[in-house]
Length: 561
Image 1 (tube, rainbow, N blue to C red):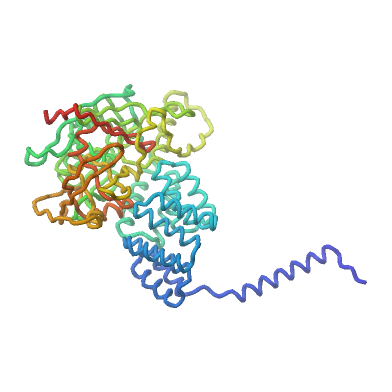
Image 2 (image 1 turned 90 degrees about the horizontal axis):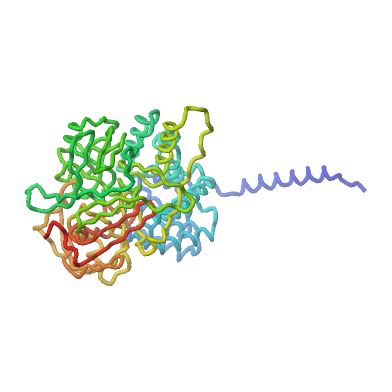
């Protein structure tokens, strides 16, 4: 009897395997051209056309999961918040347990500001299919909002490992890259079709121009040069253009030895000054930019620039990037300064005492004291840490002789640290410079309200106001923001509860906040404004996403005595 050798058997098995694979390939259904066309529309940012195409496909096959997911995502990108929730719930009844549908449901819940529900959906998707890439993208943005930056980084890295060619993975991942690599990645991303609306594309293009202008130059580190670890600075009352209406509180700031009075605005990011102030201070222009905020007049034009030095109280910083508005004033002032500018400190805005107090952040158990820098650009935490690393390298060069040394390993972002003395502080959600405080309106579930000393009154979104009951038109009210005047203003009765405090039922200014929600990426249901916050001492730890509110009824604000 013929007895084949082991090598002959192996060759036969391989040949059989190849033939089976070829047979399998021939029996596979070819890609659906209608689905591919709809996907291409989505990737090109043509969301309305994509929605129509996905709906046509689902009329033929209601269980086609990629079309179900594409439909929901197209609706969501058009800000059809309620419709997208209905669509994903309907799809899950047809195809229960689908990882792709659970992941996109998490995206819908995240956009609605339902963070706990979003996390549940994402984790369900991950358990169902550990290779569903949108699960990791969703969890990454959720944990970044929680100030769990290392967890977010690891999740993005996982997504990049699973599907590096995915266009949305590429967009999320490029933010993690060093400047020169980020420039190249962003240039490649913008050169092809990408799922972004025109406003997002414009901002990315302007950021690319900024990177091109600065990539071959040292990082503008905004380094602390004064030997001050903590300081108290007097706050000033700011009035409207009529000289009588109180606008908020501000700071005296020197830009290149030119004095300016800037509105201290916890709802703003970085430093923005008017063109007039920038020209008088001799700021060096870098690249064009557009800026968004409250108001119905559209994006405002301006540019980024560099100040050689900035002095605030006893603190002096060198080489700082600031934003410049083309307008002669910014919200009727010389400019704005976001509280996140001082994110390397514990920021204590003592409104009854009219003082800004800055003190060192709690030292992490594993860390040495971090170098101090001014966050004049309003950067995200992960990028700010990269800047801190550059600052440390620059300090080392100044303190040591120039000797060849191996380049230090990149310092990765870190998760929130809650120091023992901050155990009772309120955990907030952070989106760049925006701090969102869990807030209860009447008997509602928790909503997300922005902490905004730059908004004079408390604000409720028109969406939430209408869902809770009657809203009244307010023709007498005028609301202005960075983007001009708000066209339609209403009011609604509401009791606000946040942290351990409660604002009794009163008329709350109400208008459409959907543009703010779209820019931030989650539902902003209102703002806690200056008229209420002026009664409080507000402490912020931007690094760890923590806020504390202190109310003492015996402390009357200095400007009302």
